Length: 197
Image (cartoon, rainbow, N blue to C red; front, top):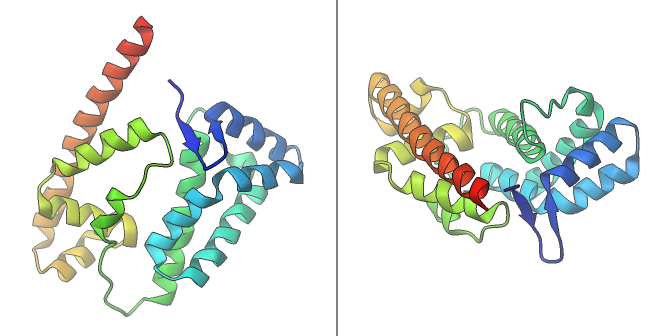
């Protein structure tokens, strides 16, 4: 089953996004505008959650689609789904901006309340991912939030949480191993079920 992006008026599949990226690679500006129209709410939500500043998020949103335009030739559909590639660019740009603008400020990880926000992308996969995250220890969830939303190193996370670096590394490894197991099992069940239909 192919993941879908659900917006108030449209649903778009990975195949449609791949087709748009191909057209962008061929220099079609209208395809970039269509990609923006179909995905900008999701991308903006990610960068706003990381930056917690609307103006900075808007600037990062523009930077993200500019990078898509200039670097679409580097997109490899064998390595990434189109949405995964786009959101990775957005996250990386937002974290780079965060590090530049808040280098010396103490920052707390994004609120876990965001996990309860309405699903807009691949709702079934989001539900499974949220369930898997919810099964982690509270300390593991906090460490993963620090790492994802701030891009801090193990040592920086340890300093901010008041924990030894080794403990942060161990919690991270255990959390990622558990998530991988839960999500891998979940995707195997999906392939089995979709293969039967």
